[in-house]
Length: 381
Ligand SMILES: Cc1cc2nc3c(=O)[nH]c(=O)nc-3n(C[C@H](O)[C@H](O)[C@H](O)COP(=O)(O)OP(=O)(O)OC[C@H]3O[C@@H](n4cnc5c(N)ncnc54)[C@H](O)[C@@H]3O)c2cc1C
Image (cartoon, rainbow, N blue to C red):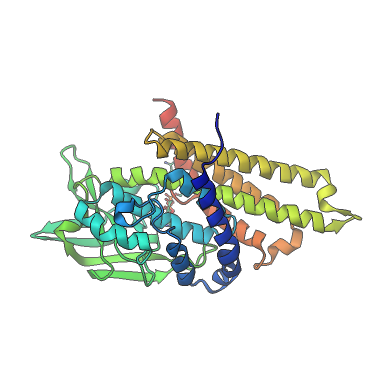
């Protein structure tokens, strides 16, 4: 089995590693403190072609394969889960446009997203419909040549920045022949009438990422803003989530790597009872577990990314990568915290941030219980 990377994959991995070290690392602490969206960082990242990494070249993107994106995402996440998540949502939604939007929609939105001039967002979750997205109540009704949308979305990432535009919204558009809800997706221009942004949530971590409630009160958009087929919304959303789950595997792997790197340095420097912490076997056990978690999370994630890149079925593998990697990253964050002792309780330490960032990876992009349900369902097919 060949585990080697191509020259292009290594080049992009190195590019992401250098950017992470030189640009993201120095600004991460500030982002964590002031909770502001990192516009300048996003601009510089976009200039490297990263905003449009997976967008085909014909739309101004870099046309790079998903596995290479996953390699770069891990690099970013070693330093900043926040920036990794901002990018991940943008890539996920761009990919939905590539797969499901009309040629006209692609021609308009993909070049803008490829340049990073606008930021993409995806609005599925509602206060009463989290894991059970089918329970959504946001409605869209077609009247003449306009859709009228009413309802609220919650926790939505990337939708409320100064550069957000074209948020993909899921809404109920009627009842199907089998009596089930018909759900469709829509492209929402930021300046649509009747569309307003709620307050940005104050979060435990991912400071700098914008998360809001979105409010639709008789919001009117042109009939042509439906994305793809009417009634295909949930299928599109769930299809998009495969890439999202693989991406969470990479982000979790990056987080474990960050925890391990910090802990290796700290336990060598920190002396107690006359010796470095790293000389004690209880410390070594934690470091060894982190390293095993990182390697196995990475392999599972890369395998799922390989399947996805080759257009092969990967629902189970994507769910496994997400479930396993995020379980390991929570453990790694707790172990890294423990190894750093009281200093980890100080908010400006990296391990404190990793600890705050880890838990949400078990909830976002479909909770880990939902991944277990998917995996079990696929196993019993
Ligand atoms: C920071 C942040 C960013 C987010 N960004 C976005 C975004 O950009 N777009 C978007 O659409 N959404 C977004 N979300 C929403 C996110 O996807 C949901 O929070 C997630 O899907 C879980 O939904 P919930 O929070 O309503 O939990 P619930 O669905 O209420 O679940 C609560 C608990 O019950 C468990 N549970 C639920 N059903 C079952 C079951 N059948 N069997 C066993 N256990 C079950 C869950 O696993 C969980 O442990 C974001 C959330 C956060 C916190």
